[in-house]
Length: 309
Ligand SMILES: C[S@@+](CC[C@H](N)C(=O)[O-])C[C@H]1O[C@@H](n2cnc3c(N)ncnc32)[C@H](O)[C@@H]1O
Image (tube, rainbow, N blue to C red; front, side, top):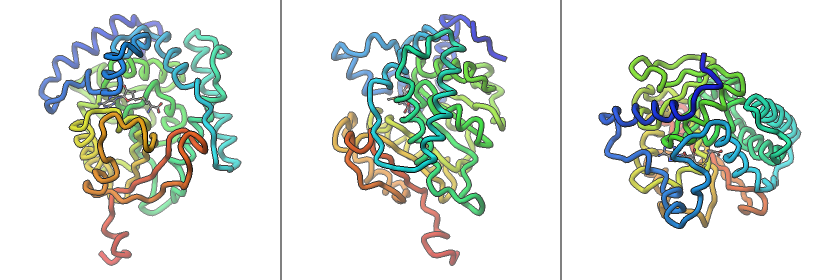
């Protein structure tokens, strides 16, 4: 079991040591510098106070939640399930912050819970409970501080999260502990990492090779694909196509028409990589919703041909 009081500097040193020794898996990328949005903002003199390249424990989680709670998260969708998801997210966040010794009253947790509830609602949209439409093995790619963990680690059979920045990676590890979740973390024993059910399986983004081809029902990529470099974007989308089973869903939520840091044509790339768009609501970003949610599917020939294969 991990120690909530673990020394953040020692955790960071361990992460850095593993990152440096994992040279064989880097696929030519400098992963610590792969978050183009951060690199750009740092070069403009912004975001330094966030400390994403370091790790100072609970304080970083506090700053990351503060980064989220400044928006309102309007929602043009009316569904009673949103209220239940919001209440659950609020309770989990309150508990997690208290566990870390941070004052839950110091944040607009209602806003964070709205945001999280919306994602979970969209991610679960019309998932059939049987057949080839299950949602039991999920991957949160670029998971922030771990906003979605409480829901998915408790409900998915196999829940995974990945990141490539030391601060967010170690924040996720700490947040999972604060939520009372069990964690199976690559950085605890890189040579022995093997997925386990009922826990948070946590691994750096450069080790997606450890995950089985076609094993995933869903991959979540919220506010990340437009923020990495163009080559990293292409690499990542190809990995999503490899990891998802035919028909598996790729849930993307980000801004449309602005904040496209890598200037990539994401829709064209997804189509060229074998994804088909299943759902995109007819809403206006930042008026009706904060970041437009979409569900893409890895094309399934059986579905395309009406079950004739
Ligand atoms: C804007 S945050 C979004 C966080 C989270 N998805 C959410 O919605 O709360 C972007 C996240 O992507 C991560 N990230 C940046 N570059 C990455 C990469 N190459 N691979 C995986 N994650 C990356 C960052 O560390 C951060 O956790």
